[in-house]
Image (cartoon, rainbow, N blue to C red):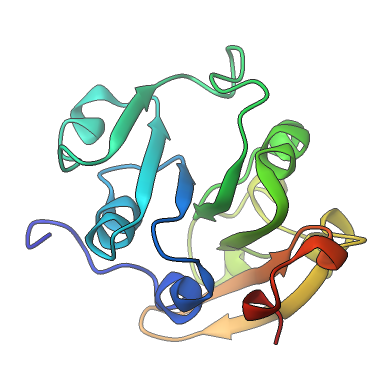
Length: 177
């Protein structure tokens, strides 16, 4: 993982909530900083990205899927995972597929830019910035482990992030706070 940037502290912070050997989906995985991190923890990771050069950097243990998820069909219809990880990516038309990919009792770890980020750089278009509380609305009915929206430093940026368990009634007690 030396050639990759470090995984998000948000993903690192909640990785312990995953059961041993979890099936994990990394959406818009890029060069695999999270996929590699999670695979190194012993999880079975699938990474989706449209960039074949980025996918080529994934470790052999990560299942790589090349797909343009914004302009083509969802490549994993009906498949569900113990966890879905999304960072620095937002394409609202995919909410049903992303949420539907988390099995009951599974975990969503999501972190991306929020409104206010334009003051610090890109992305700055509203299409790519979450409105305050948007992830809470998207995860309505889920057990929210933690939610944040605000300014982060080093580098300065505005982010919104959530860790939430789908169908809390079916969640293993180890996942609940």
